Amino acid sequence: MLVSGLLVMSCTYDVEEEQEPQLPPNDCATVSFNADVQPIIAANCAVSGCHDGTRFPNLTTVAGVQQNAQRIKIRTGNRSMPIGRTLTSEQIEKITCWVDAGALNN
Image (cartoon, rainbow, N blue to C red):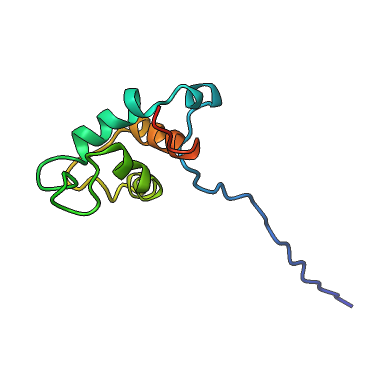
């Protein structure tokens, strides 16, 4: 008599989830608005025809950038902003660090 069996095996594997780019903690501690974030915003976002006060949100002031910090983090992180320009991974990481640290005027 022939007995056949069916062995069903399941295969599992870990799928790496995409994570936000992050600088090492020591580097995040040194990110400041004045030295790191403001120059990125000034050169790429608060430019003529964009967020220079002619279009919402106005990113020409510290308060405007701070009030929109989460939005800036999300939109630069998913690369939907700035339109027509490309930020480097390092620039995006600096914005992320600054926002995650409380979006301070430092």
